[in-house]
Amino acid sequence: MRILHTGDWHIGITRWGIDRSEEVFKSIEFIIDVVEKEDIDVVLIAGDLFDHRMPKGENLYRTAEILQKLGGDNRKVIVVTGNHDWRELATSLGVFSALSNVYFLTGVGVKSFTTRKGESLRLGSLPYFWERDFLHVGDDLTRREKLGESLHRRLEEINQRFLPNSVNILLGHIFVEGALLGSEMKLSFSSNFAIPPSWFPNRAHYVALGHAHKPQSVAGSPVPTYYCGSIVRIDFSEANDKKSINIIDAKPGGIACVSQIEIPCKELMELEFKFSQLEPTALMVKDFEGYIKARIFMDVLEKNPVSRVKQLIPNCVEVETIFQTESKRDTHHVDFSLEPSKLFYHYLSLREGNVDGEVIKIFEELYREATLNEDSQH
Image 1: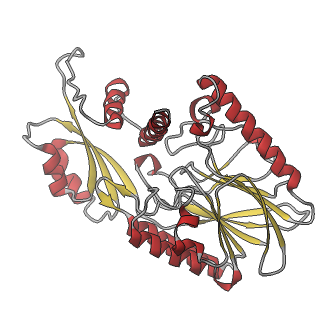
Image 2: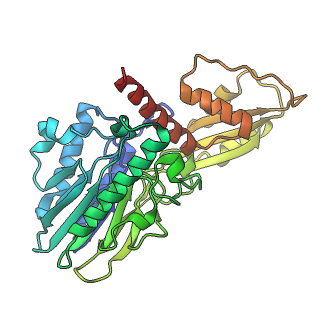
Image 3: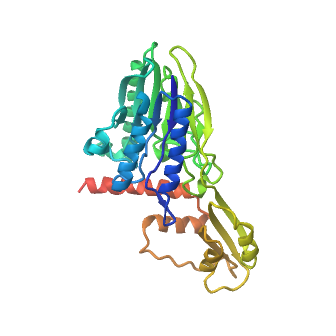
């Protein structure tokens, strides 16, 4: 059985005020070509199909066409829901419910599939777990303990339902202890609801994960376990990542063989230079087609340095200006009317000197969930 593992498409994503949908669709077209050329039997999408829970109509219909194309030639296309996805998306909208060979899994469990070659697939699903589902359970510590117990128990149940005469796969959207983000920051259960890799079912041929955007294998799992990563470089914490998809060859009783195929996508570049060197720097990067983040040391006076930088480097999407300070005790003024993520960014920039975009994403996710939790209590 030939299986393709992808995920974290984030269709409809915008960054830096730029709609990056066409970049995403270009990567998806590449994936479709691979599916057809590599004779893939099953396509796994490990969550976050969309970037927003209420996608634009145009993106919905375009995505439906893509999924139907992937499900052509009697291939199975299996999608698990992520934290950016709306759980009832597939059942609530006819555009998806009418698709053939396309399956949306929104609950924990095991489903059986027969591939176009007559092979048996047992697919365990582990969609994103919302902490608000455990709001009724005690304090934060107790809630996390109960969440962990529930995840562990359900993974054991999935393992018991895997069969020796089938190819057994777990498809999930969750953080795992020791997994790396683009920032090289490791995750732990205490900080991000990350589960120990030892919990994964030892009867599985392969564990296909989404949520972390950095493609990687997961150490400490009893079976081959991978994050496929996102299909475009979403922010500068992913600048050094090579985006890829995984192809898995598996058969009952055998060991899965895993290979990667790199996805060509726009590059991200980070620059540091003195403002006096702006013009030669702009000349140096004039043929660079990706996005640029500039950290500029202000060695000359300029009334509006950010506008000047973006004028000479049009694809520069982030500009950080560093000014010489006369004293370490300079007072920093904070606009508390800013949204929470920008206040947090300001706090980190003052404390650390630089800010990892991946940390901001986690903050936004946790803040969003906390807000939802608060709303549900009123």
